[in-house]
Length: 80
Image (cartoon, rainbow, N blue to C red; front, side, top):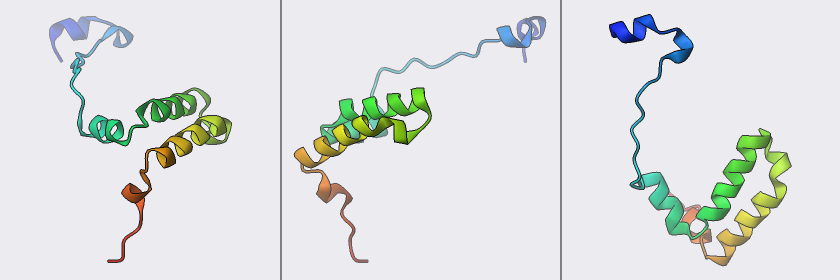
Protein backbone atom coordinates (compact mmCIF):
# COMPACT_ATOMS: atom_id res chain seq x y z
CA UNK A 1 0.00 0.00 0.00
CA UNK A 2 1.41 3.38 -0.94
CA UNK A 3 1.69 6.34 1.43
CA UNK A 4 -1.15 8.03 -0.45
CA UNK A 5 -3.43 5.06 0.17
CA UNK A 6 -2.47 4.90 3.85
CA UNK A 7 -3.49 8.53 4.37
CA UNK A 8 -6.97 8.01 2.89
CA UNK A 9 -9.85 6.44 4.78
CA UNK A 10 -10.61 2.89 3.60
CA UNK A 11 -13.82 3.93 1.85
CA UNK A 12 -11.93 6.44 -0.30
CA UNK A 13 -9.25 4.09 -1.61
CA UNK A 14 -9.97 3.55 -5.28
CA UNK A 15 -8.32 0.80 -7.24
CA UNK A 16 -7.44 1.24 -10.89
CA UNK A 17 -9.77 -0.69 -13.16
CA UNK A 18 -8.62 -1.64 -16.60
CA UNK A 19 -11.06 -0.21 -19.14
CA UNK A 20 -11.22 -2.76 -21.91
CA UNK A 21 -13.61 -2.31 -24.82
CA UNK A 22 -12.44 -5.43 -26.64
CA UNK A 23 -14.77 -8.44 -26.34
CA UNK A 24 -13.31 -11.30 -24.34
CA UNK A 25 -13.86 -15.01 -25.04
CA UNK A 26 -17.14 -15.05 -23.07
CA UNK A 27 -18.49 -12.08 -25.01
CA UNK A 28 -17.52 -13.68 -28.32
CA UNK A 29 -19.33 -16.89 -27.39
CA UNK A 30 -22.49 -15.02 -26.36
CA UNK A 31 -22.44 -12.79 -29.45
CA UNK A 32 -22.06 -15.86 -31.67
CA UNK A 33 -25.37 -17.28 -30.42
CA UNK A 34 -27.31 -14.33 -31.83
CA UNK A 35 -29.05 -13.93 -28.47
CA UNK A 36 -26.71 -11.54 -26.66
CA UNK A 37 -29.44 -8.92 -26.09
CA UNK A 38 -31.76 -11.50 -24.55
CA UNK A 39 -28.90 -12.85 -22.43
CA UNK A 40 -28.11 -9.33 -21.19
CA UNK A 41 -31.77 -8.76 -20.34
CA UNK A 42 -31.90 -11.98 -18.37
CA UNK A 43 -28.68 -11.20 -16.49
CA UNK A 44 -29.82 -7.65 -15.74
CA UNK A 45 -33.14 -8.93 -14.42
CA UNK A 46 -31.43 -11.39 -12.10
CA UNK A 47 -28.96 -8.73 -10.93
CA UNK A 48 -31.83 -6.40 -10.01
CA UNK A 49 -34.23 -8.94 -8.51
CA UNK A 50 -31.83 -11.60 -7.14
CA UNK A 51 -34.40 -14.29 -7.98
CA UNK A 52 -34.60 -16.23 -11.24
CA UNK A 53 -38.30 -16.89 -10.63
CA UNK A 54 -38.96 -13.15 -11.00
CA UNK A 55 -37.37 -13.22 -14.49
CA UNK A 56 -39.70 -15.63 -16.26
CA UNK A 57 -40.43 -13.27 -19.16
CA UNK A 58 -36.74 -12.63 -19.77
CA UNK A 59 -35.98 -16.37 -19.56
CA UNK A 60 -38.72 -17.14 -22.06
CA UNK A 61 -37.42 -14.47 -24.46
CA UNK A 62 -33.95 -16.00 -24.23
CA UNK A 63 -35.27 -19.53 -24.77
CA UNK A 64 -37.28 -18.47 -27.82
CA UNK A 65 -34.28 -16.68 -29.31
CA UNK A 66 -32.09 -19.72 -28.63
CA UNK A 67 -34.52 -21.94 -30.54
CA UNK A 68 -35.09 -19.41 -33.33
CA UNK A 69 -31.34 -19.12 -33.95
CA UNK A 70 -30.90 -22.92 -34.00
CA UNK A 71 -28.58 -23.09 -30.99
CA UNK A 72 -29.94 -26.41 -29.70
CA UNK A 73 -27.06 -28.25 -31.36
CA UNK A 74 -24.60 -26.14 -29.35
CA UNK A 75 -25.87 -27.67 -26.12
CA UNK A 76 -26.90 -31.17 -27.20
CA UNK A 77 -25.51 -34.00 -25.09
CA UNK A 78 -23.06 -36.32 -26.78
CA UNK A 79 -22.31 -39.92 -26.00
CA UNK A 80 -18.80 -40.25 -24.65
